[in-house]
Image 1 (tube, rainbow, N blue to C red):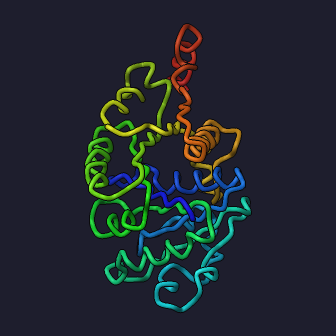
Image 2: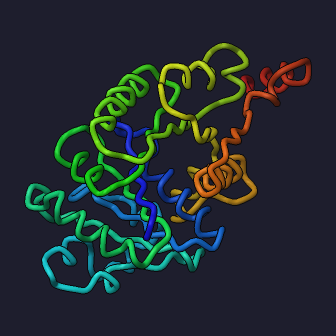
Length: 264
């Protein structure tokens, strides 16, 4: 049976879909069978991020309505053979899809995969609860911004009312130079604000923008690629190794790097 992870935040724009895509790709590189499920009905973009929008024939709503079998709606990733995407739909009334229907899809997929990663819609309304209801574990995403931290904290409180096996934290869009300059909240300070385990830190990286434009996961040898790989290993092997992106900006040489980065 698959591990069912919902990736959520409360706030939009913190990078949930990007994290779903890249976490899925890195788990698949470990030879694990992974399905990323887009449950943002009507406002989907996972297919675009993964570069498979032109391959969609059936979607999750077609599965719910019995127009196709689940396997017919799955799209294999172009780079990772162990990774599949279950797309959502743009032209459907989200209110017509309920949490039991989503759970039925997730439960059926569970026998086919090692991991099901559920891309949760922004907010804490119907779409949020529809996604969380089907999960057994949650990953809460925040960025080093007060508004994102505040919303993520609210989400943690709501998630605690569900019978989830674990709730863990990922901090996205960290900049080591700004942390070293005390211009951005530090990882350890953000982590202290949450009563859950920090399982991953993802840096701000231009390679993410490039990958989003090209469709697919970020380059493996990039800073973000290494961070996503470490996140995948932490989840799979129950480790807690966090890459220190501030380290290269400390000391004399770090000070010079910060100055150069500021002037570019």
